[in-house]
Image (cartoon, rainbow over all chains, first blue to last red; front, side, top):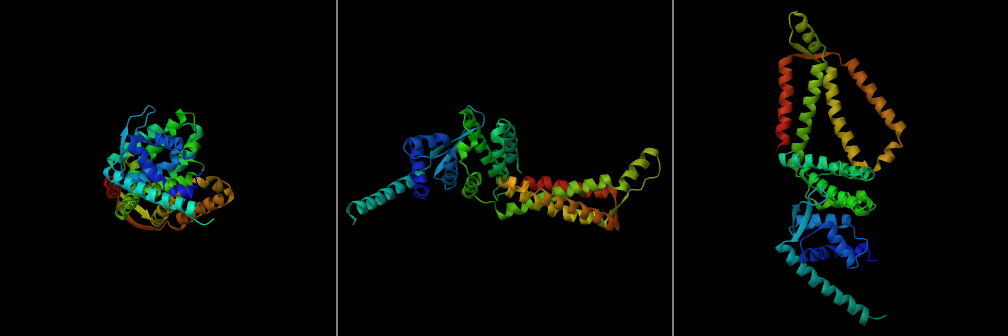
Length: 108
Length: 223
């Protein structure tokens, strides 16, 4: 299982990636992340992050009718979110390279 | 509470009815906790709408609120609160005066209705005796209002902030009983000591003051 501390900095970027694929809602995002191996990611885990992304204008939200009654919030990527996603991915690649290099070539 | 917030509040009240009994307690605790947070009433209702949708969808899938939110409801609420824009100082001041005006209008009306002068006035009007429209305001009434309003603020704030620890409060029944009994004694003392008449006022002017407080409340809640 990925530790919560490790997840903390990366989850927002991963949520942006899921939203960039198609307009989606909270439960679908959590299911999508779980399918990719992010265990124990409930809707409650990502809801505060979605609120923060929305507040920072990285995503936009739209309420639509849902089969259960209350309107469901659908999220899509805002232009600033696209930039943030690119920035996250390049940072992640940089970090991944550095960590891989350390573990492969570093002293035992 | 402005029009947009009031409409959202009404639709949320209707939706809440669909939440099952097993999920209701945790859901209510979370909403109470959010009510005590320094976020706008509009954001409180927006979050409430989102949470209702989350819980009702979970119910349809046969899942509980715990599976959606996780075990720590308070941590979830704290994360939600931290992710929302805080209520501005201006809005907090408006909310404070709105509540004070509302409380003063209600307490003022109660004091008019239960005053012996008002009862005497109605009795005289019925039996056709000469009418005296003056109403005495006692020191006790003024002190009581001065205690009730801050006490209401403190009690409400304590309940909202401790909504997840209500079991802990239930365990202190004797302490709560003692506090309640002490308050009753305090009010009886005020009623006994405060019979001194501070001033008299025309009952129509008293009603106009109560109406003015109510109008101020209605005005402030729309801002």
